Image (cartoon, rainbow, N blue to C red):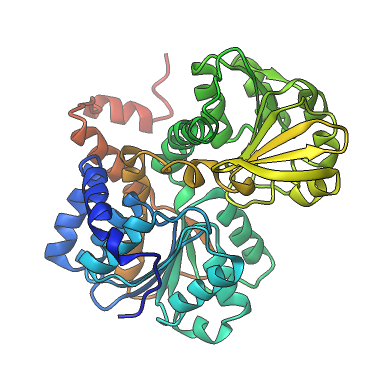
Length: 418
């Protein structure tokens, strides 16, 4: 079996951590039990480009139980948990191509190794696998019937491809499922981002000025959790509706050029490029801490920062100190990459339970179709979204009401007024 991991000797540690994660993923466990009996993915070749974490391992085990033949690589050079990769190879015989801290050349070599499987379906987080298939490995597109995409950034790229008419196969936008973005993006990103910042810095958030760039679902979560730690949260936005929502939620809202002067912590969660730029670094406080929780490391203009830097050093793991020409110091966390996965362990397993249940059921939905879907980006079917919500409530021992026949009739009518 081909694979490329850091150290096979880490497998036992990884196995225990995967077991710990699975204990809090009841929806995915129920799906795995059904998949192991029904084998709905039998004969399917799956190429997966995801963060190689304990929760991803639980998803891979579920898909293999369903009959899929899998190859897995990392969707970010710093997000791999090496012990998890080792465990998947040794204990589950799943080929993994991922090493934490791998360089760009190795990162894309690993994506190529996944494409070498000639996947019938892709499972992506950020769309690097899909974009490579459509650029460098076009010959393998003939085998692909469909795919899924995990995150906001990837869906932006895929919709751009669809609009340009270059997308070659249908993709289900898992991120757009209510049981994904309302929970994973908000509660998962919120908690894991703060976790990563604290692990990397060991700094106190209470009483600090904490700037959140972007007030999408991830930005909402980070803002909520930073305020919960006692920080004074400032939100920067370009969307007037989101900015208004942030104001109504009780946060200060201002342009980043104003926030840059007063912030102690900065966190980008926009999915866009050069959100924090050279002009912002020039006016930041001495000792400001800057990080990113968006998918790619383009939100912080590090090349621009380099041009005004006298020297830099790694002062702590995941903390690079930049000494600027003006004498001030700026601390950048995790090389501008995903702070929650680089310096911490990513989202808690209980929230990834729903996200990866969407992945598993969306793949099953496509695999069971007699004909492939027409080429475009699709939402997760509503029936799947609601099924996952019901399963999660059941696992939490929470019951809800059901409509009476009279109530259903009333909601479906137009002539039963006052």
